[in-house]
Image (cartoon, rainbow, N blue to C red):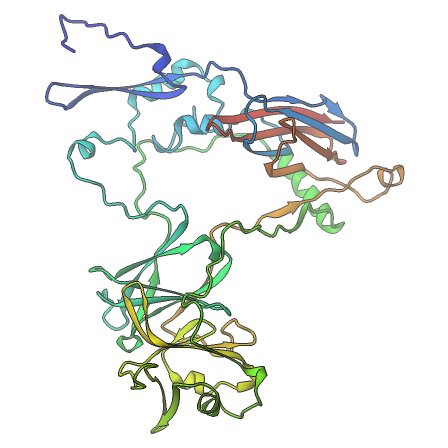
Length: 490
């Protein structure tokens, strides 16, 4: 578009401005940005959810709340009912308007309901705001960004560095092994880059399980440093953040007393841990069906592992030479001994010393699985494999070497049930055990019924106060939900 005169009007259709912050940028004929402006467009659509709840209830009475989602069924919403004095805080829709794009927000905006703020307050902020997400110099440079953290869909990322113990310098071009202790062996390998970094893509089915990382060549005396999953570089903060001032001193004291009373009379709302229903298929044995599987209970008990291999495991040899143990495997075709040692495992964990297997008590071993053919895992060639599975199956029979790292792979913290007392009978309503719960209800994933309505039932406590029914979430068409309603317990 060519500009004429001192002022040129450019009409912008209102229907192309989505609710929230719209960024308008003007470029010159050379494709360079010359002007930027942010415009706040309030949401014009009515609320997606309606809440039907009583205005006030008595102590120790049943409360029924009905949330009508309209056409926005199958939404992901959370609900809490808690005592609170100030209800002017923002919801998820207010947070999503600004998010983290503009860094730390000023006190006049941060944590507030956007709909309750004067337009002048928002416009004053946007006049000097700068996006941390859109940098035209980087975008127009033609250089693709170096993505340090990959998107996680079916797999979760785990990365780290392999460092020389004595030199503290990166060890490049070396293998790092990942194993999972268990009766079904799981194995991955990674190769370090020029900076000594390695990375693993871990399937979601391993969530909640222990994993062990170790250098592929312990003789190099390397150490493993796990990299934090959080970025070390943060967006710059252009303005000073000041904490909003709310006078909750009277409530804090009462909450503290209520908590102590609940501990004394064991009226906590924290229930048992919810067992996660695994929808992901847990990865099975990486080498498939072994060439030979020896079940120890099917044979007579032998005193030492050397005799077990000599008598019962064909093609695998466990021998002692000058007080050191070694294990070799014969090629099943020409019966020649491989010049490269096989991959040795105990409970699916790679071990680099055959003496660890030789010194096991045979009574502790449940089975021995062997693969005598050469086996490829990706580009990594294995000259046969021996996996000794103990009865416990948790790699607890031997100590973990100092160069290895064992950690529990947990993607998300466990979820606990929320429990609260019920008072359906007069004898329960009149008992003398105090119920000073500040939170009457909490559900991080409320599910609708067949009609699309969300039904919430809970019992009020002995703590007379205003309570906020706080509903936050996202609909199935990616629209934010933020609804609050006050009820009074008298």
